Image (cartoon, rainbow, N blue to C red; front, side):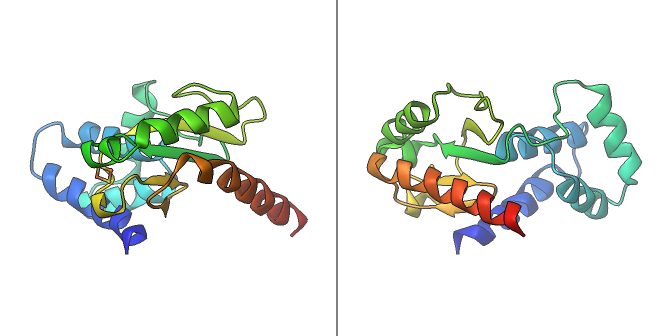
Length: 163
Ligand code: FES
């Protein structure tokens, strides 16, 4: 399933950069591209895989202020703008998210509930156009699906707050 492919994607990123110079920064860049920030649990996984202390990763993350350590919104919406998704209507889906949320690419809603970003290929082109929200894949989206997804997230958030 594609949800797993995000984990697989992290493995692919690690494999690609493992023995290259300056690899840590490139790995962290790819992670931030995907999630909108560098989640702590993912940083931990990187430390484990590269066999380096977490503190070393933290040093890099805090030295370069382009890295974000916190989610820019409760729900980080990543719209894939890779070729397959682009050709299957990702720009229209992206526009609909912008319209519904009242934000542009790379922005968060005022209540910090949603952050919207465009990303490169998510690695599940067969499901194009694909979007991830906090790592969960939404496949073969049409613009008319967008409003319902946003409502779903808001309801999920309300439920979480009740518990
Ligand atoms: S181009 Fe979107 S998943 Fe590959």
